[in-house]
Image (cartoon, one colour):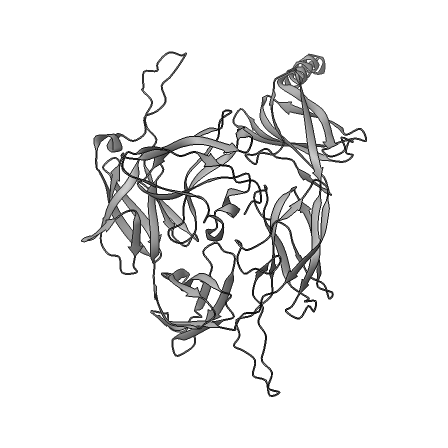
Length: 526
């Protein structure tokens, strides 16, 4: 009797579980030919209530798949060897699908056949060079791009590229060693990082256009010969008996070379390609990471000597936020409640958070500001930091570190503390609006960014997408100079210093509302 009475309960429970699920079904096809793709892996990632779900299925010979999923909203994507995902202009891949209990949702996914770039790397005499790393920059995709290494014939092949226009870069392997001493009277040759066909800079590179499922061959890169030069100097404050590394890194992380401190407190970093670098020293002591502030140097075919670095332990900084006006004190106002009864507790503004970003782009730290305006930053390494807030519509007008006043939002944190950091916030932000057009008229759904490139790595204080009528509006911008960029390319790739010289430049004052129409820079346009 007990078993008989339990059976209906289990049956009802099973039916209830089945009723909670819906079905997602559809097809995965070749975006170029329309043919169905066998054994493509389809995934659903999203939230069902408060639970994150990750569901998957494989397609059959007709490219079809079917998945049961609890109610919720999911991102449906597909992947298969030999193909790359298609994406819209915002970089979003796949499709969004809402699952309801007992319902069926249809999804059609497309994958692009892999594109490729192949070619050959040679030296100044036209001889093939083995062991050179070749990579692609730009294009529409986000994240890491494919790379390859040249074989004994100097040949390379970059596969798995989404369609687009790319800069192709060859990066020879160079150890930080002084020039060879040769007894036969010859001199060692050094080859620098080179863009196709033979440029030292991204701006001088020629773009390679790649179609869907196409391979572009015959891309010849002739490496540029440059002098073997060094950056040298001294490091003070280094912990006794510990190994100290000195690093030279380009602001956009495109080039890096290292050396080590010698017993006499000096260092040398050899074989740096022409360009700007941030040089810093670091060491470990008792589990604590010690670092120097970065010194900016520019290499242009000659040695750079007498660089002075000082290692200091990280410091804790107490701080206080002050307000230039009442609107800045109130912060952003929460959105009004529409179509529903007001709750007894009115919505509150989000808490104020300060961000400190190293101007070299390597690290950041943050602090939550209390109701009394106080905050604390723990374990801040020496360096120059750009201070900003998580509140849109409020900017850092000025600061004070101890008794030293600071105009703007960049503070130099030394290793000896330096007193209280006082941050003055203002609501006198500016905005820029306009229309993005190409040769055919207004362009919808393309990214527009306000970029700061005055020091270190590029910053993106303002980003938006154009509307259906091509209009854009960037708000909450602090007074200062910006470069405005509207492009179909990956914005990070476009934001490198060599690639924004032709971007629109604009200066915003306190509370300014400016209009600036922009011309779309097509994918891969130089």
